[in-house]
Amino acid sequence: MFKTNNVTSRLFERQICTPAPGTSIHRARRFYENIVPSYTIYDVECPDHSFRKFTDDGLYFVSFSRNHQDLVVYRPTWLTFSYKEEDCDTHDLPLKARKFESFFTQLYSVTLASSGELICKDFFLYMESNQFGLFATSTAQIHDAPPTGGAIQGVPSVEKITFHLLRLEDGATLDERVFHNDYVNLAHSIGAFLYDDLLAIVSLRYQRIHILQIRDSGDLVDVRAIGEFCREDDELFLNSNSQVLVNHVGNGFHHSLPELETSFLSGIKQRLLSFIFRGIWNEETDRTMVSKRILISRVQCLKKKFYFHFQDYIDLIIWKVQFLDRHHLLIKFGSVDGGVSRNADSHPSFFAVYNMETTEIVAFYQNSADELYFLFELFSDHFHVSSKSSLHMNFMSSHSNNIHALEQLRCTKNKATNFSQFVKKMMVSLPFSCQSQSPSPYFDQSLFSLFQLLTAIDSLLTIQSNSFLEDNPIS
Image (cartoon, rainbow, N blue to C red; front, side, top):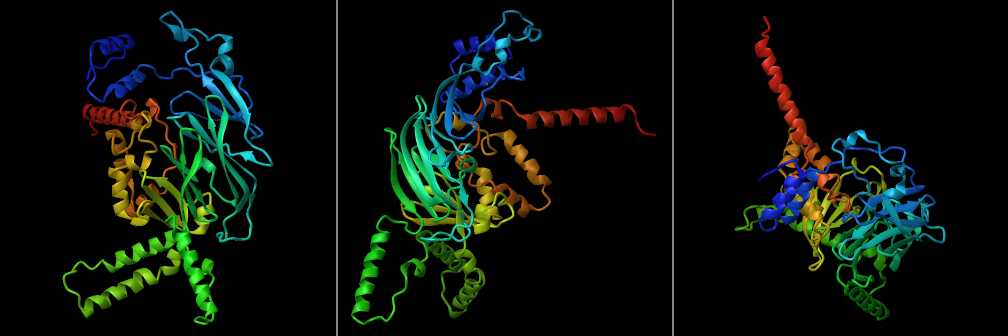
């Protein structure tokens, strides 16, 4: 492909040449090779705000007031100053270029937090199709809260957590969702994941995955809650059967009735245990003959791999969730300590793929599983996707779509002394936090590759070193 550092030549090329089908956006992004940051302005007069991020489409710049009460949104004004001379680097920028207002225009400021709540400055999700923004406010954590109402022992409680859905164009609040006496990990948007119009919120305290839909009207609509129940009628079924047990007790058939809250595992935990059990049971490769010896071998295998670790599986809690598509969730399980710890790297963890429609676990891996790593290496894009409709998110570089990123990964893998530890280190980031990566062209490794540059410099230094040794042999 014709490539030049001259912007005028590229504009002329775009005018006379037709790009191949499906490459028009990528071709437009190649213009960033000619427009790169080359100047830094220091000591800019900025408002006393906590700046969060730009939206992926570049239309809004989100910030919060220092008291974590107000949301302040700006619109970038982009190109502000220009020079006609050729050697523009020798000129100083005008004084007004050192002011924040020269580059951004404030659209509005709205108060989100109330009644002792504070804005979580690390939490912000953007719905590009409707230009909606999702924000969170919460009260202070209670670390020693008693585990009432089926809550998990050791998980802190927050009296009130509020999710606010705003229209970023004018700051209008469209809908809110409140969680009382619960705990959602809001840091870096870990506890929520947005996929197109579907939103998943993870309640660590009550081990529920709340699936909501964001309508075009701005309404937050409940779709399902996954946790103690998996199907919509599970609760009705259990309640109706418990009534039958009560009637039997009244007729003298039973002398005691167990408490349903303590006698049953949650629906998602039962699905998980069932999948693990069936996987171990079916490990025998020869399924054509069933003999007493094979049955004994299977039972021994179950004792070693399932029943011995049964309580460990029971104690697993949901840490984090992400959508793989509109029907499948990637769920990360681990211990209670790892779920609330700031550094969960040292805690063992497991990954499960859950089908929301069939309510089945379809895959289960430990964080050191080779199979999961190879899937991650080959299909990394499936772990990053947060929207099928976003034009920007389709151009993020990964080792499954970019040769430079793949070479960088292989270089890291080859340097690892222990492959199992390398796999664990790579799996720490899964599931990825929603919208944690930027689709900026400057991070597109097909356009800009620091690894490629360093490799080229290393090769050049090697060539020069070899040439020097040839010209100056050691006697």
